[in-house]
Length: 195
Image (cartoon, rainbow, N blue to C red; front, side):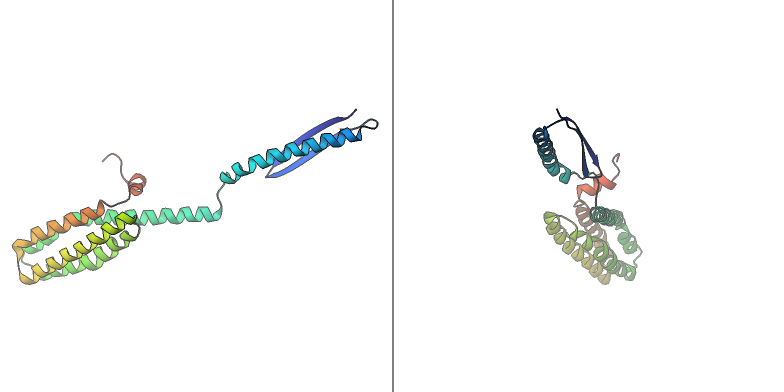
């Protein structure tokens, strides 16, 4: 008669099997059959659990962690650019104030500064991080904003202060159209929900 105890221990991904046997007489054949059956049952259990363990490891690798951190940093920078564009759109009234003061030199300088610092540093880099449809529409708006700034510069050089408010309102509208392309994941992640 064979008395057997089979204990399985799963510890840090290693399987240890301890078989305590006490034999009496010539039952070695039944002992081999029992051990073989135990091993095949264990092998089946391990094989069935492998795909599930591969899908959800219970931990993340350093590569996954670094990828997540880089994506979070990229999203934060993109949200910051969209927030800056939203703020700058409301500041287009400065063009109107300069036109009222007949300060056309400052108006022209402001239009060029908007092109170099706001359009090129905030709007253009944001286009790259949009989806395909957003990239296409963002590229179109970028060109329109450039033309708006050129027209403001031309109005300043021509001294046409009565047309500046219309041109600055058009610029504001186009910048806000671009801001509307902001990915929803950024709004959900960083936006204020009660506004």
